[in-house]
Image (cartoon, rainbow, N blue to C red):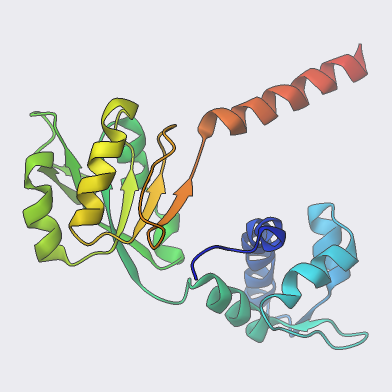
Length: 214
């Protein structure tokens, strides 16, 4: 079963913020961290924080809060961020290159081990230390690398074809940064990231702010 319960999705999106606060508390030497403090830092209600954290299996102590080190471990374990995952980026343009060089991924166990692109001026070079191979070598390289996760940043016109090729060569999880709704087997995990939707939310918030101040 690879489908996340819809009711859990918002909680999962908040967990990284909780983890950041928990890690800061750990670095400061704090032994416990209250849900009320987490809530105040993030503008949430304490009951929401407790509900979100409950999916990780961690339990707080009355009047003390959550033990910090177990809290960090519980969140990382639930998110599978305590396990090394190797991935490839397909499409080494501006976005693909930026993702290849994002240092935060390694803190969460995600390592970009190769990138692929059709552009002749990219193949054979490296982006932030990540080797870039021609897309035509994708099948051969995937067999050598033995990775199961791919980050897709290719043009929409070829997204489905590339995704089909990836799946045929053993990829079981795709982080899709194109605006194409991929049609893949049910046992392939796909996470879609629509950047235009994120910008739409930012634009709406800016418009509401302007109207409020007018």
